[in-house]
Length: 268
Image (cartoon, rainbow, N blue to C red):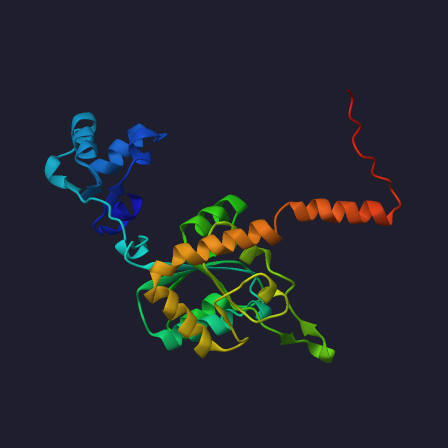
């Protein structure tokens, strides 16, 4: 308002909600609006309110509705692939991005939940894949559960990474894969350390973008297998990776410590 008074440059203002309902200085608001060349507001209600309460000329007010960016809407005609893991070499993000480049198709979106020292978003941008992958960063477990429930299938192309001095950076058996299987999701992963003990099918060689692209293409083109693979994955979790393993571990600790576990007494 004051810059217009000093310079004579036309002044416009856009009114959403706060300016009308929680403005701490109504008197100055009325003065400023009177000195404005054009007022843009987002609803007919706002326009009529300003006319009635501030005696603003209706010709000065234009209603321009807000909009939703359709590019950000989750598209039902697309498949959604979830990857969960820190941004580290052993998680195989680079392999996944290279596979996506090989695939050269637009009927899917990758959801990435993770963070770390690698610039995975920058890598995706350099490969021209920024429109194919959404980065959620570090998220709460409840949000991760929603993503897992909502995705079509899960992918984690883990691999060996040689460290300085000859040591190897490797996975154990990723819990993220177990969680996806528990939700009844198909899983694509690699023949890496203990992963084949968990995942029965859809395994590819480590650090092999071509094989990974073929596996992803297969699941994208054959949604009829989702239910069967997902059901089998749930069975694997219930059979081999359920809470009963905690009882097994507890019994092992107690036995090693020499604790005698008494059988429950039955009272007649």
